[in-house]
Every structure is written in structure tokens, then in C-alpha cells.
Length: 209
Image (cartoon, rainbow, N blue to C red):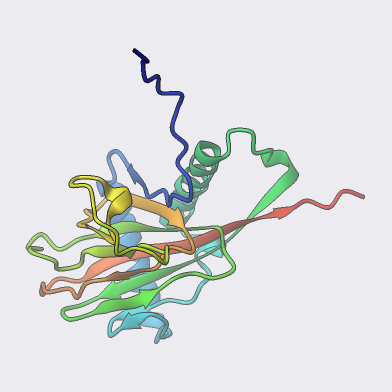
């Protein structure tokens, strides 16, 4: 009689969604909301995947405000942790991190249409303010499977067999995922604004002379 021995399981072609939570984020979020309000009052914003609402320019990583600088440090740390998790031997000193980031302010009915972030490695979002009255799917973020044959029979409870994944974020949460992962944000059904800071990151190899 033979005995079946498990030798291991490789996570082939998986898309890691990493969830961080900033401890004691209330004071940081208060500072960020003040900075965002000042900036929003001075700029009409731009249109990207946002439907309604306000979208800032992509210069978050160059901002000098104290709240932005603090969050930027957390984001860089998250990028390093996620990269180390998928590539333990990644040689960080050989590379520089390039990034862009922007602010989204979505009022009632505002949402982000399905999109991905080409030409980047990591993408993510930090939740500054989430309406207290959120219910049902209001403001949820949904990710789509990038594989072609997604109409397989699923295994109950196994995310790797699902064709989409939906989650409800909360203030102080930071999400990171591969930039190829297509996603969108459900409409905000609250009278309160939903405020987030999204970002992209990639690595550029340092040139030594």
C-alpha cells in the first residue's frame, strides 16, 4: 500500500493582494484631510478613471506637506515588504524606486471605472476617510481575474478559483497589488466624501559609472 506524501505547492501565476493597516492612523488622516482640502481648493484636478469627484495631479511622491511625507514613508516600506515577500532574494541596493501618486475625493455617486496601471510593477491605495454610513457595496473595491479560462468550476471558499474578489476597505487601511490586476471602485452611496490616495511604483536599475 503506497502512502501519498505532499512535496509542496507552488503558487503559480497568483496575484497577491496585500493588506496593511496603519496603527493610530487617526492623527495622520486628520492631517492629510487638511492638506487635501487646501490642495483641492487650489486645483480643478484631472480626469482619469474617476467618474465624478476630484482627482489630483500625479505628484504625491514629490509633495512636501508633513502628512504626505509621513504616508510616503509608509508606502515605501510597504513596497519593500511586498517585494521581499514575492522575491526574498531581491537586491534592493541595485535599484531605485520610482513612483507616482494621486488623491481621489469621491462624493455621492462617484466611482472609479474598471482599469489597470500599465508600465508599473506595484499599485496601491491608502484610505484616508471612509464614510461611517457605508453599507452594502458602497465604495467597495473589486478585482478581476486576469486569466483567460476563468469559467472553471470553483472550489467553495478558494479565492484562487474565483473570477473576481470584492472587499470593503476602512480608514487607515493600505492595499497593494500587482499593477496588471484590473479593478474598479463601486459608487459611493453616502453623503460623505470618500478620500483615498492611490499610487504606482516600479524599480529602475541603478547605473554605476
